[in-house]
Image (cartoon, rainbow, N blue to C red):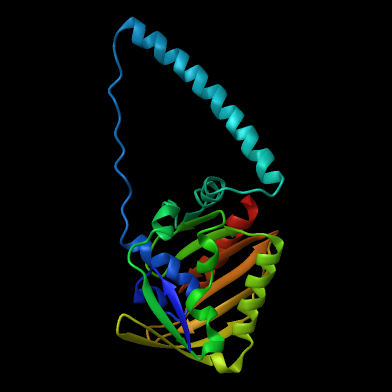
Length: 246
């Protein structure tokens, strides 16, 4: 029996798929309000604003160039990964990444117990990697979302190997996840998948009695990509957009 300290609610494990744990925070989060200052009508203020605009434009161009160079070198940040998710659209709506800090500090830890113990990936998934590595998350709904985590080559290899060990283990066809006094029983099975421009793709199909949920995982370089949805066509559309911008 494996015990995992996990800062997310049971709903995150309801599909029997660990990467969906990242989605539960979004359902309870709200974006910080944005305030703006009314522009001055004075000539001095207008001149200052023009100078500021020119400075900001130069800074933006420099930042853009630096970001491109950084990503070409394979070095990602929370911000550059979030920018990739910001380019994704679902049903015509642009995805809004949530602050990754909400995931890293996501409230009181809840303990998830996974049985059989050999299936512990079903309870942890990407979570062990989020705190110490560049990451980004967007969750349009409680069961649909996407996440990116940039890892070292060794960690990326390990995560993919752990995922495969779960999906290839017949003992993990049925798992039980317990937390906060509640228990979820879920079936787990594997489906092969196109990579949509990425490597090592697989889909985990989980069902806790409310319908199949598909969890796509793949890698591009050392960036792990996960897309989760009850709709496989939506997974293809999202994964294709992410791969094109990575």
